[in-house]
Amino acid sequence: MPTKNAVLVVLLALFLLCGCGKKNWHSSWQEAAPASRSAQGEQLYAEARKKLDQAADLESIMASMELLQRVVTADPAHREALAYLGNIHILLGTAYTADREEKIAHFHQAMKYCELSMYGNPQFRTAVKGGQKPWEAAHTLRAEDAPAMLFWVTALQYEFKEGMTLPEKIINVGWLKYGIIFLNRIKQVAPEYGNGAVEFAYSICYLALPSFLGGDTDLGKAYLEKSIASGKGYLLPRWGKGKYFYQVTGDRQSARKDLRWVASQRPEDYKDLYPWRIYFIADARVQLEAL
Image (cartoon, rainbow, N blue to C red):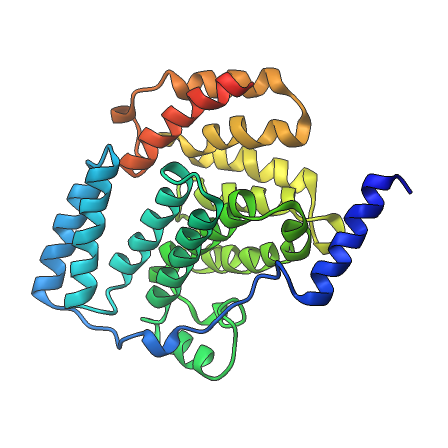
């Protein structure tokens, strides 16, 4: 066995024996409030979404987050506000944070907000209170829980991609199977949801998982093409293909083509959440320089 591989095996064995690098889940159902709505909360939420739909820089994103936090102060179980707080933490972690530990903190907070959103579903809350993990209780979730489910999976994928070391990725790759469970549930209760984002998340899971855990490169490729077909008017699928797909295929020429296309677009012509549009275009330019 080559020396480098032998060292990796030893390190992985030590990681597994001591529990280092293993991703754990901690229940937050005790922090969840019963579902409620108020006129004040709805007005604040409308203001927050309007601001978020125009947010083009960190300052305006943080202002949107502050408004969403005011929503959950008024209505602690406001599902949409909680889910979009999760979405913003994903954006902060990937687009505005360089430190790995800070990234992980954002992605963990995103998953927690998404779970708090799901707890607005009383059946889900009861199942988790009874000892089930969120992915084990996914069968209780409904169409209105689709944003929280998708953002939970997205946060997990970003933690895996940007927050974990190689040994941590090897140890924790099985978590992506939990992501597939949530994606399957979205397809059951809200099959048209996501505008290609659900299919894109599927593709990441199937491309990243090893075959013995259900990974399937061909299926991952097929889902990516479905993502592009379903995501007309959205930048995410084409950006994701340019940024990640060549890492599987080695086709840098196609990656450059996709990234050049994204980099040349105008954000006002697309429908992704506005600050994500800004990020996709800016990141495509960064990726082109790296290629």
